[in-house]
Length: 302
Image (cartoon, rainbow, N blue to C red):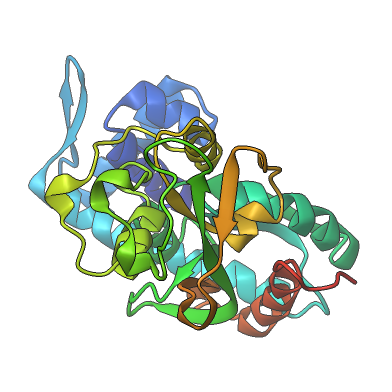
């Protein structure tokens, strides 16, 4: 009995979901069909890959090793398919694009219609989540491209810097946090600073540009949206740093919020594109990067 790519894909899904039902749903097949393919794979390899439990499935030690090899094979197959698509003159077919939450809502409304016009045969599939997850999925072959703040620092990835996204101070016009005389991000008091919750790279970037801030004085936060942060500023609850990309696309309450730029000391992040070094579509991805760059604040569209 020969091993098939379908069996490897089913095993990878089961390793990710740890549950036969969810893995079957992920693969768009019935649970009995997925279970049968896993049993056939075990028979072909003459090893037990999965421990069936009442609550789901657990990989055996050899199962974990087989999954690691299967993921490498599936990534290579994906790159082979990309190589075949690369023989065309333009990007076409499915393209899995990951974007971080502090960029996606403010970039995609401009990017998506332009991408449809420039690459009419391209089928974009969007994945929005935090940087660490996107990097992991990109390296594993589950995504083709990622738009995020760079550098990402992963040895398996190629990165292309696209544009700088400056940070602007947003402060309430009234109340105890209507602070004056903040000449740089490093002057922002820790107990006044409003941040996204842990796990968002924008939180880490904000803390980095604020210098040696006393993390013990930071307020805990469960906020996941920059729009919510802006509403808190308008309500006088604190101040924050907001990227130009956000401010260029979201209206703000000028009666209650004061925006301040830092001039020569203006902090910023770099927005870039990343893909696997082994992907043969590098030149096409650079062309796609040109399109993303054209969506930066202050850049005239096509």
